Image (cartoon, rainbow over all chains, first blue to last red; front, side):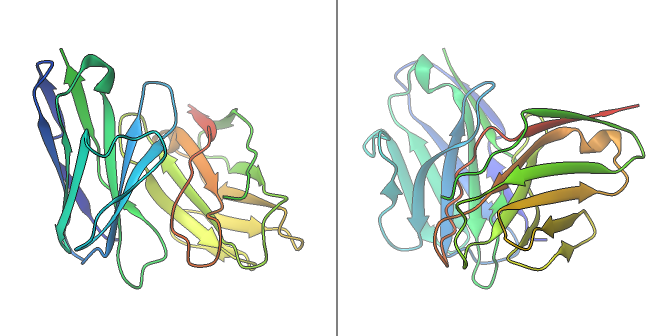
Length: 115
Length: 111
């Protein structure tokens, strides 16, 4: 199956700083990537959908100026959490949908802790 | 997405078949049923999907009822590594790839 990686796997940062998370499709080109967030003991919540070369579509309640998404190539999407606060601490997971695939392939997730 | 209903938890003895049910009574004729699982602190893993016919791959079998209002995911010989939360998802509309994760079924495989 297709492989999606995320970097870093975990990050700890101070409140007010920005953190960038990378999502890469390693062996296929991803026309569409998705970003999810998962709080402890809860299910995944879709944050945004990004298509290569165009602006991301954010879900209701997700601040686009706080969660900056860039999908500049067919193998890389980045999520930047700007001015992070403790309530942004969560498990962030990306997924990728390649042309010809009928399923999403998920990355291993990034654990963000904001102190 | 079409609403799906799953039991919150199930136990299964190691080596036995695990049968995970899912109700999706509002599913439309062109909507697929997808199954994913999430092992603790990992990203979800695709298992299988189907439209009408039963499907089988190296991981599992998917049995869809004739009226398509429910389905069952079967892990033929459950192992301890199959302990995870299993999600049954019906993305809305043909060609829609957005997944809405519910609470899923927490499957515990018991030694």
